[in-house]
Length: 420
Image (cartoon, rainbow, N blue to C red; front, side):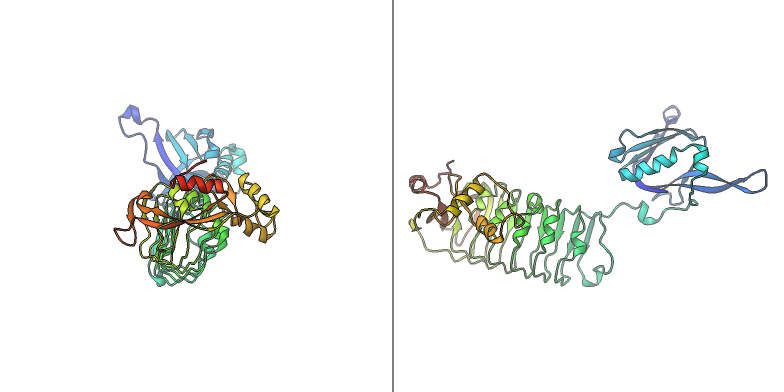
C-alpha cells in the first residue's frame, strides 16, 4: 500500500532539547510493507511491518515500526486530504497534507488495524519510491521544437500552464483537452485550423493564446460552455476569422481581447455586455463601423487602427420599426427572462434565431423589427489609451440597434445615454 502526499515531520521532544522541531513540507511517498528482521525461535526469519517515508532528499526512506508503536491517528480533516500519524518511538508526528482523500482513508484504515489483523493482510516488501512519486508535480511545460513534442503518452495531469509554439501543429489534440486543471494554454505560431468544441469543457482555463494560426471560425459551442465563465484572456491575432457568433458576449469575465490581423467585418453587436473587458485590440481588419455598445464599457486601452471605417459624420437611420412577429415576441420573452436554451431543447434554427438578438440601450431586446442606426462616436471617450487610424481622428462611425422610436429620440437628445 503506497500513498503520495506532502509531509512534514514534527519531533515532539525538540522544544526541550532546544533544536528545530519540524521539517519543511516536502513531497513524499508513504508505504506500508513487511521486511525481514530478527529470526524467530524456530529459525525462520520473522517479517515485521514498517511504515516507510520516502522524500526527494531521502530516496531510500525512513522506516518506522508499526507494531505497538502507533500512538494515535488524527483524521478530523480527512476529506481535505490531511491527517496526522503520532508514533511512540521515535516521538514523531507525521503531518500529511495534499493527499487524495479516498487513498488517504484506505491507507489509514490499514495502518490502524490491530497487530493480529495486520499480520493477516497481504503486504508487499518495502522498496524505495520511484522518482515520479516523490518529485514535485510538474505545473508548467514549454515546447518550442517539433522534436520535443511528446508522442504516444499523455501530458502530465498536474499542468497549469502549457505552451507549444512553432511546432507546426495542425490541430488541438484530445490529450491537451484532458488536462482538467489547465489555467493557461499557449498554442501560438502553429498551423491550427479550428478550435475543437470539446474545449468548452475546460472549466479552469483563464488564458487562451492562439496567435498566428489558420483559424477561420470561432465555434459557438465555446460561448455556451463552462469555459465562457472562466476565460479572462483571449488572443486570436493573426488568424483568418471573418465573424464572431452573437453568443460571443457570453464571455462575461473576459478582460483582454486581441483579434488583430484577422478578416473581421464587424465586432459583435452586443460587445458592450462584456462588462469586465478592459483591453481591446482589433487593428488590421476590415471593420467599417464599431458597435455602439462599446460606449457602455470602461476600457483602459483600445486599438482599432488600420481599418477602413466609413466616412460618416452625421446620423443615418438605415431602417425603421415594423410590427414584430409572434416569433419575435416569444424570442424577446426568452431573452428578457434569461431562459436557458440549447439544441437539445429547441430546434437548431430557433437557437440560431435567439442568438441573433440585439440588446437596446434601454435593456430590452429586438430582432429584425428594430431601429438600425449609424452615428459618429468619439473614440477618445471609450478608453484612456486610444490607437486609431490617425492621431487627429476623434469620431468613428458606430452601429447600434434600438427597440423603439422613443429610444431613438432619447439617443438623439443624449448621444451617450446609457439609460435603463
